[in-house]
Image (tube, rainbow, N blue to C red; front, side, top):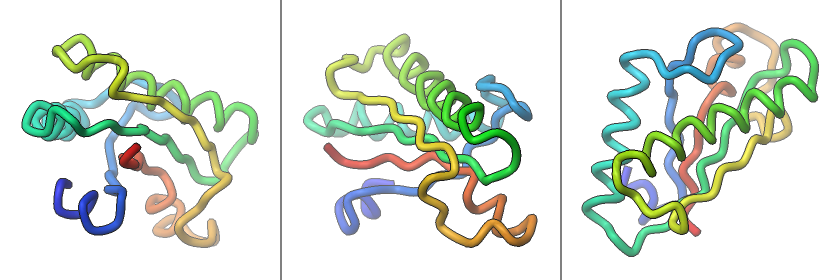
Length: 118
């Protein structure tokens, strides 16, 4: 994550949440722990945590869901000692896809969280 952030200003992560919910699954918690470690090891690093969805369903619902998921990560990090002033949550829904939403494979790639250096 750190190398990618240093090189491009962001890191793209695929964090598993329960379907249509903002609840972290166990393997999603493992990724959240890696983000926690990144922030603990780099105390000057500030991140925007940006949630993204595919285009399935209602656009307003997807924006809210993506924001809720970003906020879940921010809450997890702050509960574990990261100062909230170092974090910002954004929900972008399906507004910035990495790929066309024309296959299940591409839709899966669009369902992501990006850590963007502030």
